[in-house]
Image 1 (tube, rainbow, N blue to C red):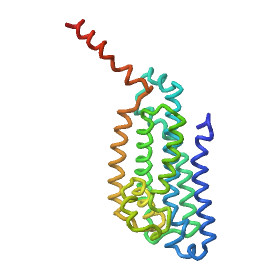
Image 2: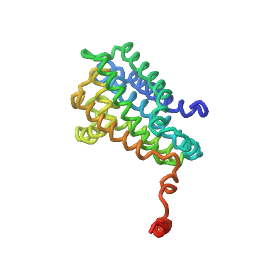
Image 3: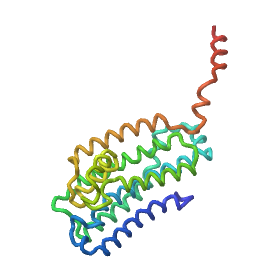
Length: 257
């Protein structure tokens, strides 16, 4: 991120831009903004926060890892005793610092704007943020486990992050979209994350209990995390170099016999 500052600034700019757009929209729609239940900015805050975290996970983590593989840097790491899980975990501290800035800004905005609900539980919100962030980073590591084209990865991650915002389930006030769309959006893990956040950030009622959403997000985290560690390659030719050709296998068998 220090070598290429745009890597870290791009998702932060997207996060700030979404807050600005919905802030201006709320100001223009003064009648809707006066009603907390239909306030555009209040309804969108969970989606904006999830999108900001997803941007840091996918754009600031997946893309640099793929770039390191494409430039051969991961191959050099593969020649050392460094273990894959340790290397992947070492990517998190700087990224978590950016996430802390976004979370602090959103919580401050909620308090200043008076979006706080009647039953906010900030300890439960902290648990939601930890589990949801772990889920997104596990998925980001999985996507970076074998990709080797930085340009295509950057484009696909940008599209993915925008899709996270659109399909997070809270980017529009309740009742705006048709009811049948909830069947689709509620099946997406980012919707679980946004719904759990909204329960304790803005007081909106989630479609499932928060504990049930935690269990589902933890399941995705474990599955994606295990697959990411097992599938992660230092170099895109690692699987080929570790598997001898068929002719070499038969020659080895003849030598043994």
